[in-house]
Length: 236
Image (cartoon, rainbow, N blue to C red):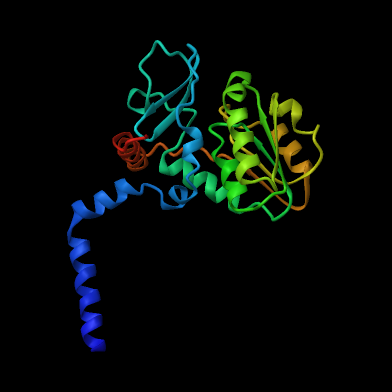
């Protein structure tokens, strides 16, 4: 009987492995199992932000924040990458950054983006306080009420404060932190900001910043493929 069970398991595994269309369908239905469990995307539905130089586009479950000139063709296929989106690679990056935050500490992040990293911090029950620095006031106005309401409902144990300002000016004004993450549009980050951020760390604190974007053909294809999958998944 034991040998029969083992054989059946192997056979099932082989059949699923051979059926590429089934694998692709499963990937499309659950583009990110970690994030799908959180259901935080409900908070991001139907965000209204529409200016000539700052806007959010939504199609299916794809949400993209753009900064630039809206009169020009937008999107990575036209050589213009969104400032933030909810594609799988963004989730992985934010999730991995949030994992390095210590329990019950103070966390600081800049900028706000779509708020993914602070939602991951809260879901992991990591910090007791999160301070967000974002220089784009219009983005804060659109997301702030949604985020604060979401936190008060689902994560009341986590204090969140969103400050409109430039991280270069604000980095030394809010005390010390156990975790600092800088995810800025402006790249590269200046050496002065790196030094000031490290000075604001508590003992054993962690400082993180966005790495240089790898524009290899393989990675670009993966990003576009993941983006296309999200566009095909209904958002309602």
